[in-house]
Amino acid sequence: MNAQFSNTTKLDLSIQERFLNLPNMGKVQAEYVWLGGGLETRCKTRTLDKAPDSVDDLPVWNYDGSSTGQAPGEDSEVLLKPCAIFNDPFRGAPHILVMCSAHLPDVDAPKGLGGPIPTNTRDKCLEIMEKVKDAEPWFGIEQEYTLFEADGITPFGWPKRGMPLKPQGPYYCSVGAENAFGRPIVESHYRACIYAGIQIAGINGEVMPGQWEYQVGPCTGIDSGDHLWMSRYILGRVCEQFGVVVSFDPKPIPGDWNGAGCHTNFSTKAMREDGGYDKIIEALERLGAPGKQEEHIAAYDPNGGADNARRLTGLHETASIEKFTYGVANRGCSARIPRMTEKEKKGYFEDRRPASNMDPYVVTGKIVETCVVPDYS
Image (cartoon, rainbow, N blue to C red; front, side):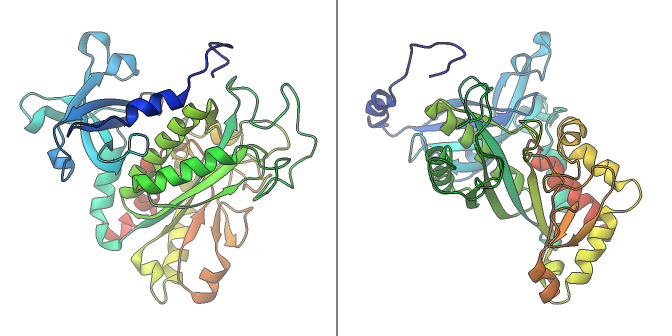
């Protein structure tokens, strides 16, 4: 039930289940997923005669870009290029989810695919990752999010037009109906991601009530963005079925409440090998070079740093947005070196600045561009 539209109509998913259990008659439903003009996931389905062996077997498709803020009405066709295939946890086997990138049409190009449209950030990320693929860049992304009631205003588990009885403290990694709000959604999403083939590493309750986190990784190169975006799509679909709204806003509730980030853990093969600690420090120094803080902050949320300005205040386990810092086991720094990484002199570091609504194609590409590409120039 969505309170924004109706107080009386509630869809019974058990009725839908009767139809989903009908034989698929040898057909495969392929759900094409892409990013709209506001960095939101969009989707539509087409029927295939058989399951594809790879993305190369999937047809290029198109959509109305004027309805997603990505093209004018007089020239509205945008093409979808299949990039990655996942199992469909909503329809089950043999049906699939397909992560796509958006392109201009070009009738003279192979498959009619032209260059990337302006909001296609995947192509640039892929170019960067291909350039340094010998470095084997790994990413582990910690996606925080907040659940809201169907009104989109009340955090899930909070009293309407009120505040929780208890301040922050008991909710992080919590147990009990008085502390943990929305666990059925979280568990459903977790299992759906596992079934889909997403490299989901874990889940936990977060500091603010109604706020949760899941981790995706380790993923290599472009796979990180593909897996995180598809995990967000699946989360949106799961929340849709529960009648709950998911928010990736970096500071959904003002005041003395934690914001939401998308901490990005990063390493290369050289960092993970014996003696890799020097390469980690080298990368961190590159992140702190003159002008780099401003450059990365502009890339770490979709509004050029304006969203993160509400979150990166130096409070609530964040560093100040003004200055880059790093330290061992310090969650008040811009980047954290894990204690065991320092001890073993190899491993990874965590960039704690990316906002929860960041574009993983932009963020992973930017980290590699600053920390690794100079070694390939």
